[in-house]
Length: 400
Image (tube, rainbow, N blue to C red; front, top):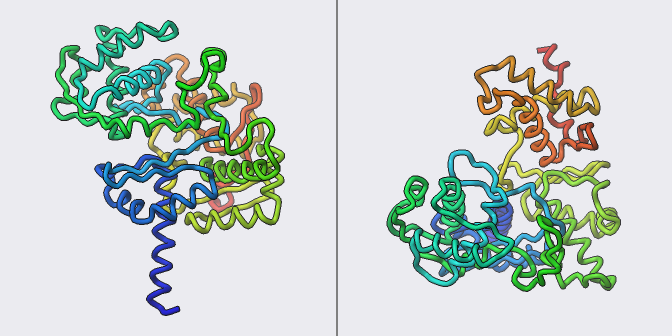
C-alpha cells in the first residue's frame, strides 16, 4: 500500500473516532450549531451507523437535508445523573414540572409547522386540563411562565423550534409577549430516545407515580424474559459497551453476572480494546474496573476536576479527605463544608446561609457519585478506587 493510501486510511480512522466521541458527548448535532462536526458526521455516516449498531445497539439517524444527526442512546436502566438543564443563567436541572411541560409542548408542537408562544401556551393549558394526573398550567403565574420559557429555550437549543420573530425570554415578564416560532416536527419526534413510545404503554404498566415504566426501556432484540443464548450474549456485549462509553468509570462489582462473564472472556477483552482504539480513547483497565479516557474531552458533557461550579470545587476539596481518611460520615462532610464556607465567606454566596454547609456537602457528594469517585451507604461515604487519581501527593509537595 502506498504512503498516500496509508495516510488516507489513517485520516479516515481519525475522523470516524472524532465523530464517535462528538456524538457521545452530544447525541444531537445540528448543522446550525456546529457545521464542521455535522459535515464530518454526514461524511462518515455509514461506518458510524454500523459502529454504533454493532458495539452498542444504538441507532444513529443522520438527516443531511434537515441538518441534524441524532444518536438514539438507550440505557439498560433508568438514570437521573444527566438531567435536562435550563438554558438560562442558573443552568439548574429540570424539575418534574418542567419535564411535564416539555412533554405537553412536544405533543402540541406536532400539530402545526408554525405557532406563536401565546397559541402554544393556550394549547398546553387545554392539554393539561384534559389529563387528570397532570397539574393545571396557569401562564398568569410568573413561576409557570418561567418553567414554560425554560422548556421552549431547551427546544430552541435542540433546533426543534426556531424563533422567527421576537424573543422567548420576553414571555417571562409579559404574558402578552409576541413570539413567532417555526416548528421542525421531525426533530421534535427525534428527541424521544425510548425504545417504546410512551403512547403505546397501557396506563396500568406505568406503575406508581414517579416511577419509570419498565416497558419504556424494553428492547425486543434481546428477547425479553426468555432470551436465547445468542440474545443473552448480544445484550451482555451491548450493555457493557454502553456503560463503558456512557459512564465515567465502570467497576467490576457493579456489573451483572452476564456482563462480568463477557468482560472476562477473551472475546470481551478483545472487543473492549477494539472499542477504545476505534473511538480514540485511552483504555485504563485495572482489577477494580475499566476507565475510558478521552484526552481532548470531546466525548463528555461535563468535566471533573472543573471550577465551573461551587459543588465541583467542594467535591475536589473533600475528595482528599475521603481518600486519606477512609469512609467518613455524612455529618463529617457537612462539617467540612461548613468550615470551608466559614474560611471563605465571600465564596459560594448561594450557600452562605443557615444549612448552607449541608447543602454544599450534598451537592458535592452528588458530583463525586456521578463521576464514580465515591459511594454512599447509609450515612457513611467511602472513596472508590478511581478517586486515588486525584489524591494530593504530600511527599512531592514537601520535596518541592
